[in-house]
Amino acid sequence: MFNFILFSLIYKITLRINGGAIIKIDNISYEIETKNLTWIDLNPMYLEEGNHTLEILANDSADIDVVWLYSVERNETLEDLFASEETPAEVLNYSKINPTLWKVRVNASKPFMLSFAESYDPLWEARVYKDGKKVEVAKSIQLYGVINGFWINTTGENLEIVIRYTPQDWFEMGLVISGITFAFCIFYLIYDWRKSKGDIWAKRLEKSINEKMRNLKLLRKMHNF
Image (tube, rainbow, N blue to C red):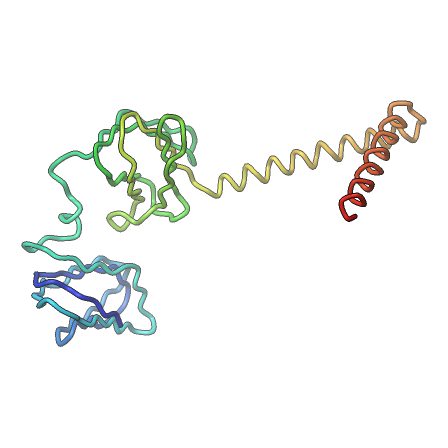
């Protein structure tokens, strides 16, 4: 149940639902039943200025993805609402670096929605760079029910937008950590082998490490005092 204040206008509700539900606004109710995840546009309604109560009574098996409540002048759909006669941004060029990384160059006079025609996944994000500095990170929202959209607030000329699948960052970080660990293990094996042979280099290295450890312990003691 949601309480909200509206001005005297025509309103519509659009929702994406799988299953059955009853949507109530005051004494107006809509009964919905779908067999798969589908966008549903409810009939327009006139609501007087003031407080109103919205109730969503969903079946136990129902899955409601998103609900939009918006004012309309005619019988517009949600897509009509986001449509614009003017072009707030112009894509100069774009390139696919790899399946998880894209780069886009944009001139933008106003905030805009950047659509990205890959199957929707909330783990995509758009990192916006202006004059070489990262100024904004936009999370993916579901656009048209199937693809990714990024609402970009930054304006200006020659913006660079890096579209990145964030789990790839974690994967690459894991590779770096694994590489460093592997290199350390190889280094230790070489050091241990040369030490067992009485190698002067290994003895000097061990002496240097021991001295640094003693100095570190001394600094800690001085800090505690």
